[in-house]
Length: 493
Image (cartoon, rainbow, N blue to C red; front, side):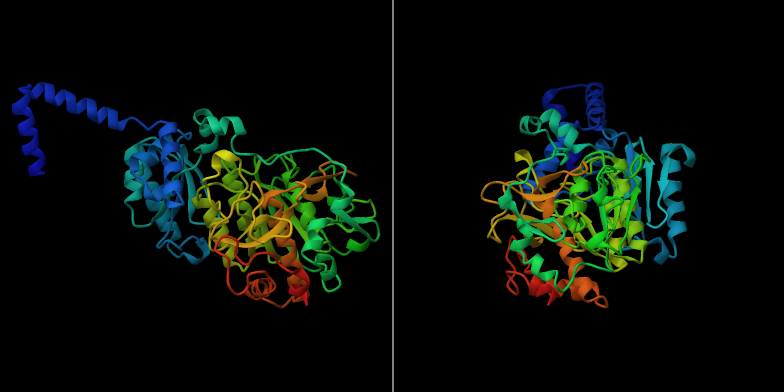
């Protein structure tokens, strides 16, 4: 402090400015510092952190930076509280109510508003809430509390802003939504036929899945799918799901995004449900990996980029509800973000604490996000990160797939011809192709269902161990592709 005063005195003497002029200058500087950063500045910092450190997290940034992103994100804030960084479960947190009241008291004090005017949501199962905050001082006060795990912008639209300021992002369509309603005539080289008339995708054969069906078809195992929903028009994922060779199972559909139902309005979730558990049908259409498994599908997002507050809240809700469903053993999600989201992280940890085996997509990107490694939440230790590789390889990622040290398994989904994996289309009676780490993830979740159905008394860790032992790089894990491709026949024997 003394050094600062001394330097100011020298500055004053040398420049012969008046005390009044100096004070005016200080006021101008303070006002400038109080202005929120632009979205361009915020995105540049996020990109820099990912390129330099491999990751970005709001907790590593200044109060002003976080507040600026809150300001640019509809003033919505997600708060995680708890006695420690792992204190996310209300049922295991005896002081949860007191900690929440303390947080609300601080917000009331610095915002000058009553609770009803700033509290948006208080989670039923997690130590998490969403609020509206206007003042930077509130952010600072909250982040100084010992019972705060994170304070994050809840509705900062990174990809939307990137499309405005980044030429490469603009030209690539930004965010790569993963949506599509197209259908395709399948190339005869991309499938084989099986009774009673279903098509087996070429990728299944590469992993010895048809041979594995002699031992397991997924019967008795329930998979939870968190995605964009399932098409109401595709009867093989509706009224004909439980039929013929795929009898004795159920499909359930829930909508937790924007209160507009469980129906897929993107097309992505339908394809994931197909590769995971489509019935062994007589319609001449693709079959799924675990064609006798039960499926619970959640519509939790508009598309695969979890950018908005409503999407992130819906995904959190899907994870907690699937976590609480004792019938569910496996959860698969082929969606994500390029950096961590606290409330989704809480949801994943909650489901994991309930014994669920969680598979998440390692990432599929256009050119402007090629600097990103494994995306969130696949980057979390509680999840199994999956990526797609080219045919007959276990260490050559697909043209748009991500790789990295956090990848656990790979799945062959791209042919030399460029064709990907045959699946059911959004429209009834039609087929299509789907690729990327998305289809690799859904297929691997189906593989886990085959292993678990074969060994119904096993724990999550036992299932994982068997999958690892049946993979390319066991026991020497590859630095970018984990255990590699799974030999499914070996995994179920």
